[in-house]
Structure formats: C-alpha cells, structure tokens
Image (cartoon, rainbow, N blue to C red; front, top):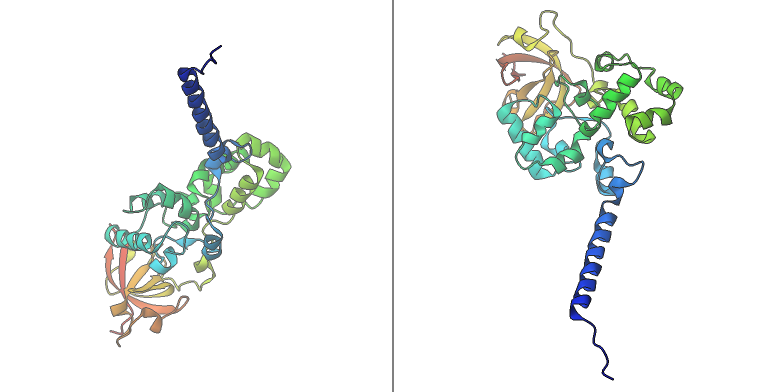
Length: 294
C-alpha cells in the first residue's frame, strides 16, 4: 500500500499560521510596557533614557532662553548638533515663548523633545506649567489634579498650593490617582513639582537692585544706567537680569575695555554689575547692554 504524502497546501497553510503567530507574539512583547496596568505612558515624566544620561542630566531646571550650548547638550536627547541648532534658532527668532516652540527648531523632533522637555523651563511663558519640571505630556494630569483638590493654575503661580500634598493625603492617594487615570508615584511627582515652579540655579543668586521707574521692557531707553545680576556666562557674552522679566545680553565685545577671549575672564554668574542700555527690540524681546565705561 502506497504511503500517503502530506498535502502541500496544508503544509503551506500551517507554516503561514506559525509565522503569523510569531509576529503577533513579538508585537505583544514589544508593546507590553504600554498596556501593562499601572504604567500610564501618557503621563510619565521625562526621564533620562540611560544611566549615563541620568548622571549627566541637570538636577535643576535649565532656562531654555539663556542656557548656553554646553549646558543644553547635557540634557537627555540633546547633543552638540541639536544644542547648536537651538542657539541658532533663538538668535534668529528671539526667546522661546513656550516649551512646545522648541519643536520648531530644525533637527529637533518629537522624540528629542519628549526626552528633554522635562528639564527645560520657560519663565516667559504664559503657562506656569512651562516653568516647572512637569512634562508637557503630564499637563492634563496636573490640571486635573489641581481641579480635584480645589486649586487653579493661578494659585500655582501665586504660590498658594502649599497644602496640596496634605489635601491629597486626606482625599486618598489611591482614590485620586484612580480618578486621574495615573499611577500614585507619577501623581505625587507632579504634585511635588507644582509646589516649586521656576526653581532653578538663578533662584539662589543675588537679586538685582531695581529702579522703580523700570518695570518692563517698554520702560527701557538707550543710555539708561542700571544695576543687574549676571545670570549666565556663555561664549559670546553674558546675560544680565535687570528686573524687566527678560535678561539683557552683554556681548563679549561690550564686557570690558580690554581684549578677552571669554566673558568668564571678566564676569561670573552671580556678579552684581552696572550696565548701560544700548538697544531694545521689544518685538524680538532682545535687550543689548554694555558694561564698558562711558
């Protein structure tokens, strides 16, 4: 009796099923972190992607509008090329008005933004959350948490949410987190950052001696003599806080009368200096200053 050979069509069908099963299983394995309970990706704060990044990432927020290239390239997702692109864009278009404007920078895509956004702040932004370590992906959760606890963004800006964590404890952490659709650790991280908006390196520096007749950029006039505090020193100059919510730039050529290779030879962060207004561009929010003696 002749032995019956397996049907080729049946074998091909079974092989196809095996391949498809492998693809489906592999896909489920790859997306597992997304659908596992208790890991709401949409509200995860930006974190360094590697141990090296975690060690090099700044422990305080970096001001997007005054940071130099050397500081920017230490942020997760930002290398020398992207840092240079950010500086070039800022020089051409003026200060960033809000965090997401960073996405307009050439060579800086959504992935890099997701990695670095939580370490950058924009004090000039109308949205107070842009001046906190709360990641943009968690803004929805932050606003929902504030509403649940009876607060508003105005309260955050005014520093009137000192008992936020106490209210959360009283309400119930697990209950609140469940209502917000996020994990308890993420919720408490967001609450902690909401209670310290704008906290950065410059907060520990001396306050500038302000003139009572100079409160905003429109009050500035060329030739005005002001006192200010050096907030940042970069390759091409120094940024000085003169009390108008926008730091002025003293170009390296205007730092002193003698030749210097770098502004740090003449000034340091925290120095209280006397400056003279050279030019004011309200549209681009740029203030040019000089430290040279008249």
